[in-house]
Structure formats: C-alpha cells, structure tokens
Length: 484
Length: 95
Image (cartoon, rainbow over all chains, first blue to last red; front, side):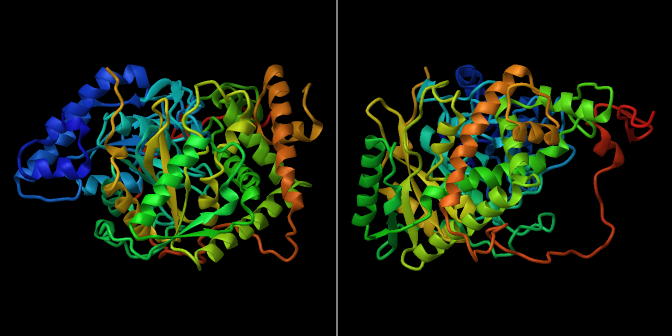
C-alpha cells in the first residue's frame, strides 16, 4: 500500500527499485477514489496529469537522476498557483479561474522531481479554523467524520492523515498549518516569515502568511522544507538566509536544550485531556535531556485582538482585487461600482465578508489610529515578549489547540468563539517565529492532539531536532484512522 | 441599509460588498461583538511603542530594472469575465 508511506520510506523503495512512482501515484489516486467521498479533502485532481508526471519521474530515475522528491506525490492547498490547473481558494468568486503560472514553491517541487497533484480543500481564502468556510463544503476529520478537520489547511491535513497523498503543502497565517495538523494527527510546520517565497500564494494577510509542509513525520517536514525554502527575487519579503540541510538537524540529541512553558498559556477553555497530553509530552522531552523552564509572555491575552485587526486590515486590501474585472466570476451591474458590489456580495462567503468589512472598518478614516495603529503597537509588545523569552530558552512548548476537534456546526454561528480557538498558534505569526505541531496523543474518544513547539526566527533546525527526538520515543504519528 | 450600526454601514459601502437584509442583521451583531472584544487593546499602554508592520524587517529590496520574460498578454487576460480586443470590458462609466 504505497499511499501509506512517508516521503523517506517511499524514496527508499523507489531508489531500490521495489516501487515505481506510477505505483505510488496510482495508489494515492485509488485511495482518493475509495475514501474521499467521506472526507471531501480534494476539490479536484487530474489523474492523467498526475500519472504523466509519475511516468516522467520514473524515466528520469531510470536515466540515473536523483532528486530529493523524485516521484513523490504531493497535494497542494487550493491557494497555491499550479500552472494550467484551477485555483479557487475554496471560493465561488474565482469562478473557473485557471492559473497562468506556477507559484515559486510549485516550481521548486517540480525541480525536486515531485508529482504535484490535486487541489485540497480549505477555509475560503484561508479564513477560518475548521474548513467549514469552504464554498465546496467542509473537509471532514478522518478520525471522526462528524468533526471538523481544523483549518484553514484542513484538506491538506486530511489528505495526509487519510493517506490520500504522501505529503502536502498548506499555508499558515494564524495557525492554519499547525492547527489542522494537530486535529488530524499529522506533523505541520510553519516556517519563519520570509523563509519560503509567497510568490503564487494568493494573499490573505501579507505580513503573516507563510507556506509550509504537512507530513506524516518530522523527517518528511525537514525534507520538504529544504526543498521549498530559499531566496526568491519575486518575493521582496523573502529573507536571503542560506538554507541548511534540515535533515542533518535530526540527531535525536536534545541534551541541554532549554524549553520554556509560558505561564500565561494556562487559559480558560484548555481541555484537561489536551493539557495532560502536552504535559506528558513535555515530560518526555525532559527525560530526553531538555531543561524545562517556566517563562512569561505577558501580552498573550492581547494576541487574538491584535491578530484580528491586523489580519483583517491586510485582507481587506488584498481582497480588493476580486472586483469582477480582471478574473473570476462577475455579476452584472449598471455601473462599475454596482457590478463590484453585486460580484463581491454573491462571490464571497460570510466569513470573508465579515473579515473584509472589519478590516475596512479598522483602516477607515477616524478609526485607523484607534484600531490599526494601536494593534501594530501591540504587535511590537507581543514580539518583544518572545524575543525576551528566547534570551532564556531555545524553544517554547504548548498545546497546539485548546481542545481536540469539535463537531461540524458546533461553533459556526459564533465567529468570536472560533477566533478564540487560535490562542496558542496566532502569536507565532505576529512575532515572525517558526512553529511545528507534532502528534502527542489521543483523547478518550480517539481524537488526535498536538504538541506545539515554537522557535526563534530561522530556528527551524532546533525546532525539527526537538520534534524529531520526541517522535522517536513515541508512536502517536504512526496511528492511522479507520475509514473502511 | 437597515439593521446595522452607521459606522459599520459606512465600512460595508467602502468595501463594496452587497449584503442582504438578513446578512446585514447577522453581520452587524457579530461585528459589534468582535469590535467590543478587540477594545481590549485599549487597556494597553502603547505610549512610545513603535508600530510593527513586518516581523522580519527588510528595507529597500530592489532588483535590477531590466526587461525580462513574463506571462503573455493572452495568458494574463484569459481568466477575465469580459474582454474585447485585448482589453477588459466594464459597465459604462461615462454617460
């Protein structure tokens, strides 16, 4: 069953000639056909195109080529451009949009030999924490299909957890990689802001967005990050830091590493089971030789308010481009303004409307200083908290989410409650840090839970080393949902 | 517009989003709650604090101003809802 393999396992089998990329790709396609009706992870996929890429990879391997992802099927969140394929951001407003170019990450995956196939489900324009905001219906959690997958990269996490692909890419603006990875039982890595090019990623909040991998284990996250990271002259926010060999960091040795526990993260609404699981995970890290220290992040309680001002302000500007003129669907109107209003009223879903209106409000004349400028100053204080903490510790540990996956529909009438579930993931984006979620246990009713580790800007090697060391002494990441 | 605070109605107008009466009522009340929640930031003393626009500050990122390959005119236009003669068509602006 090649679809159940990790990148490293599949690559070994491909190298040894035990499997072909066609076998692996066909196996993923068969798995999608068998289980995706239950899950709704894939919005579309093109089997003929996937198999053609697989055959090309097999031919390249036969000709002696070696590349880090040669022949490995990778699914893409529907917010990343793939030349010649649809791109909808799980929204109606893009109509039958078809990408005229490849995102930089897509090009890098191709250069590394990957089979880039399938667009996976998400919250519309990456706005949400449950994938219930998709215009194409929610992606469902493979551990309990009555429950949410998390979001916004829900489809990316479901596709990996249900073995419909070998690995996937998601994007993370306030937790959108780490949160669904935690709720579906996979590994999700949000790289440092500026580590991965955003060229070809449809913008939600440009100062917060970052593309990253969702994988079946930590080694795969390291491999995939190594492929997609790096300088890109087409993204002026991309930081020209050299890309290390991230897999070299996976030594298993974390003796003396200092890991901080923020005292402010003992929040109301933290599920006791989630707390117990993360406490146990921290105890494992301590047994492995890490030094555990309590730290303080005094501005934690302001992070959600800060985020929902900054992110919606940026979104209101970024989504102004969907006006029915240059691309996507149009609803006619007597004047350009009426056409814009009708197009946007019909094309955007409710959460997107809510955020655009909020963002417009906080940027509008008379409110800018009171909301937007004040939030940018609060962001400075939040970032400073982390910089201070990282003078005492190498990493910060917490639960990824305050609860395990909730029922579909449970929070959809109350957007503020939904926002509050982002409490542990959101600061990482505001402060420009890197973060990872790794599986750390299951609730009594069998739902996955995640341990989040946060690292300093460009501290991905430390982050991956600790996450990998933890994974070596646990087997949570090897559990598979039963979908038969 | 009916059931929405005037300041929010103004934002809806600026955002160019047509709302149904039902959406107006629901979004109006939800946005009111959210604005009440974010008022929490007024507790903070931000006197003398510099605003952060980007967590990883880079300035003056420039490339050489040289012609280079890009996607074709046709490819750039192909997703537009209405075009003619290589131009985007919009409703009449001037009477």
